[in-house]
Length: 119
Image (cartoon, rainbow, N blue to C red; front, side):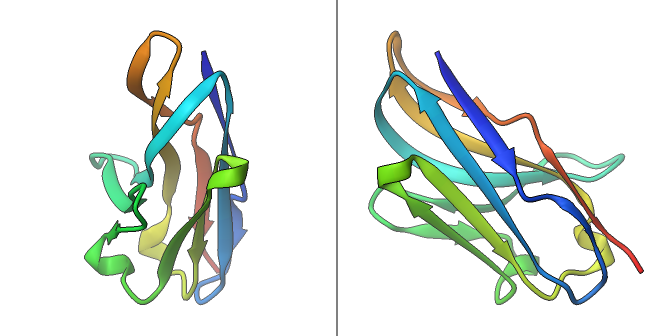
């Protein structure tokens, strides 16, 4: 069994910054893609950014230049640095990690962390 623990969400004013963290624990043989998704009220969940095992990254167009994803493989942790936050970034942010563990390979979701951008 693999658990993901997220932290770093909260309330921030427009133009502010937040750093989200997500750490995977449990019986982990390998971690592949690590990513962040978000879901705003009444909207579908969307990919914010992802980091492949080889260092490749993908990111939402609206986040380019503002959001940076990084990972520390030794700590099984993925980060999302969010700068110049806008009210439209308000959402629940979820980490998603593709893991090989006991029983095979599958992806896991974090519990979600609320990010609210408001003055």
